[in-house]
Length: 492
Ligand code: F6P
Image 1 (cartoon, rainbow, N blue to C red):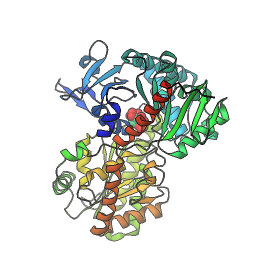
Image 2: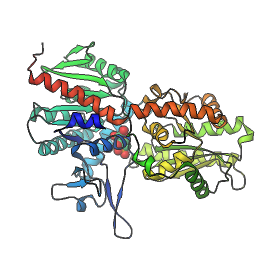
Image 3: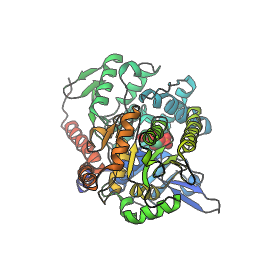
Image 4: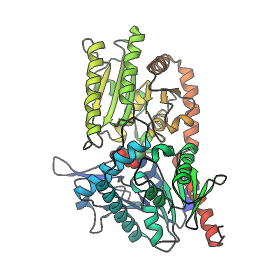
């Protein structure tokens, strides 16, 4: 955190991200409730914003968002602390449909994730995507003070914004971070607006991805679809006489975690969670925490629990898996289908192995605030993250942050960015139910000393490579670029 503050001294950072960190809702009793969205992006970036000053430009999505902001859509957050400004941009129903549900989430999301959902590209959605990128770029430019601001453009919602901002602010340092995977160029090439997307992104000074493999995929796409000079050694692209660095910056979480600090000790969490769920004290409890999204492998996860119960009859009646599933993007048909099929599957497994009060799967389909999620992390014997494809996956890192007791086992999909870092987890292929169920068995049978050894090592890793380090590394690279620009180094 102190390294970050050093690099940011005197800097006012502007973040643009679709999701806002605080959502104001009108509650049933007429009062206003503030909630934290289920978003890895928010989990990572909110502590960074609290550590520096500046503005977060986002889509105002809560029912009481307008009345809590001023005439320009600005409000100081976090509530009570007020360390930075949240600037809300309001979208019409059509804009939200075309830009967010349509192009971003029915087009780019399945395009970038290998999860067998076909991307849909509609000209109307693209038109809204372009217009909304323009509106956010305008809002960013209104918040800028000085000629060379530092602007962090977040995620696949804003591939066009870097170029739009660059045209208005040629001296800005624009850092774009892509929070999801970047596909290989065959796959990327099916997008009808592939060149426009790449052009837009190359307005950034630095393009960040979670892994070197995603950087390589991006460079391949530029190579294949654009007239640009590639410097593979430097991981850079020169386009329109400007250089964009393309670098891996694996994202992380705040350390120490504010939520872990505010959560009661393990024993209390375990007692209260088991009591709430009506489970006996000798329960072996697994937990999954996700948005209800088809990339998260929730069906494969429940099937792995089913396979475990088939293989290990002695666990029937004892092993319970609780899935916290936050409803997400429910306007989209594919998400509604998933919602229905997860329910049917959980019911089927419960019918098959349930007896008396015992149900092996507890599906809690609701938004859970971070403090509630951390109670479940602490109560659990293991956490299973089974994404079919995931840029990083911060649930894995949050589970580790919660386990100050150095107990609990992380079972982690090989197809997450996190699996490259968290090597002391039990790494599995979530499609392989034999392997996944063997890992669940190993998790519930693992001796306490082995759990402690693995967890200690995982905690040391996340403590060191925390989100301040992530932001710090990007800002150090940005500072070097700014210095170079000031010295006026010419590009060939
Ligand atoms: O991390 C990827 C991401 O799409 C973020 O951009 C987003 O905030 C999060 O997942 C949750 O999705 P959504 O904002 O669409 O609810």
